[in-house]
Image (cartoon, rainbow, N blue to C red; front, side, top):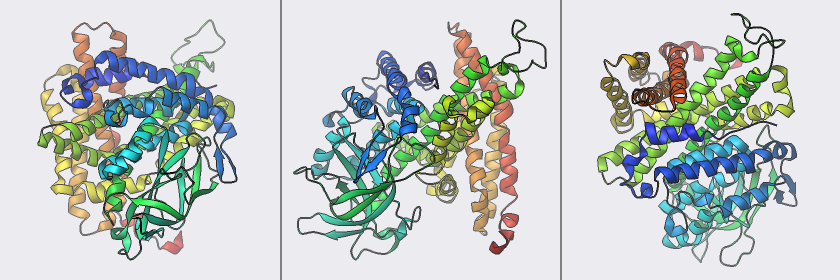
Length: 592
């Protein structure tokens, strides 16, 4: 059975030492987030993931969900685990106190979600979309809708979903056909079919709140005519079934313990959420939350896969070290002595620690964007969220998947066997690169929309953050192994941006051809900044005589590895970007 230990110490290092969240105690959500409270919450979150969810991961994958007569049964143990989740108050960790929540900062939910996904991704998807539904209704709903739905979503008594994709259209939502017919009582009759709906039907809660994109009769064509509706499984006023049903569940590569549903709406009663024909604006509240959560899934599966690979590498005996015998009392050395095994383990570790810092940094920005009294500070935080969201989703899931494959490789043939659990991590991680907008779409969003938005203000803000770090640590010899590579990578990003500005306007294919490389280049630079911040913190604490010297020294070693062996990949991305689209687009379609 796979092992997993929640990285509580790593999370606390980022929150308390690197980000110094105590400086934000003036924000209302941080008022109760004292260091002791934060540590207690993260410790309990880790224990819940390790003790309740991890034991259900392989069994849930083997059993999968059952579909009979329109009803979905989740794997054995999932209902009991969900009941404990609700009893413990985890769904309301960051929701508003007026809705029964605890009103704590988003960083704590990000950490809890990471632990849940690492332990059992399929289970984590059931409550996972409820927060997005909660925030969409909180931001765009009427007072009556808020009073009706938010307490139930906050408590976990009800769960939420997002219904976008239809059999004939995915990303191109302008093609959707689901209809909304106005009714005399102010509601709408929703008719259509949605596919790939995570947790669209299950037996964990009595009611499920579906947020559904549909077109009101007579609305404009394309995305300008799309509206968003609240369509509950059971009608809140009387508990009777609504006209919504699950037609089937998908047989899929991974996340077998989660029901991916085909949802049929047959005149189902729905209520407009937000403005008529303003559905995409309202849905983007949900989608941005979901995309950040999916990026976090890339980190979470990379973390648990790498933990298992490291444990196996310490124990598995195979061959002798090329630099001399390391375990003379044994028939062979453990494979962790071999440089290529170290390469895979270090790649995963260096990524995981920086990705966690990026997730926490961005979750902190989310709270600042909402609660800060400083208008400019709110604007800068919102700019960061907009720019970095596609990078987090695309880069963290691409790299997270690659790390699960590398972790499986550490196991050799045993990694291909179900019993070790490694092949499940590979299968589960694969979906994160696809749903909530494929990673190619994330890259196009970054290059095509986010870079130029508001005159490139968000990108200039990012360069400002990097330059402030570099300038603030100029002349610090201890940090030279971090600042010099970061400066070179930062310059690669600037050159790539300049190339796009000069070559993409006249030939849009250049932007499309460059987009994925640009997204990964930016991701590496931001992860490099995270390592710079962590290294500075670790070095300062060592200079101050901190007791946890081994932890801090290991942090510096891992960071130097990232700077020496991973960050230089920005140069290759820049070369591919600068090559343009000519050879990529040269072959005629019939030649493929």
